[in-house]
Image 1 (cartoon, rainbow, N blue to C red):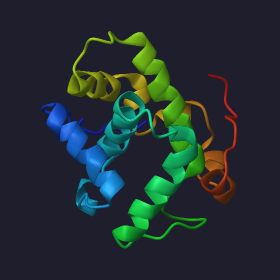
Image 2: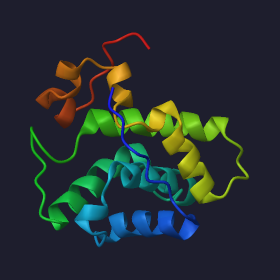
Image 3: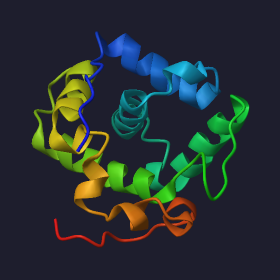
Image 4: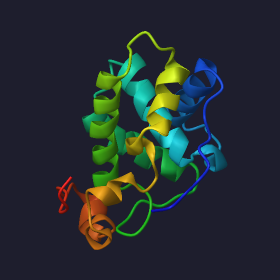
Length: 146
C-alpha cells in the first residue's frame, strides 16, 4: 500500500469551495486531488439532497474533467467503479461518525479513516480488475474478500 500525507481541510468553507467548484467546473485542475474528490462527494451527500449522487456524479465528474482539458475514455478520466466504490464507503463512514460534526470535521474523519486512503479500493479489488477498461467504463463488483 502507498503512503501519502493527508491534506486535511481547514474549515467548512474550504470543503464547500471544492464542491461548488466541481459543480461550476471552475475548480482549478491542480486542486482536483484525491482529497478533493472525497470532500466533494461527502459535501454532495450531506448538503445537496437535490443531487442523486450515484446517478449524477458520473456526468458531473466527466463534465468537470472535460472543462479542465481532460479526456474521459477507457484509459483516463472518470472511473465508474472507483467512484461508486467510494460513494458507498463515504455513506458508510457518514453513518458511523457523529452527525453533529461540522462539514470539515466529517471530511477530515473520512480522510483519516481506512476508506479515505488512495489505495483503499485495492483492499476490495485486484489491481488488474480495478484498473481495467471495463471497471473504468462501468461498475464491476469487488473480486477480493473484504
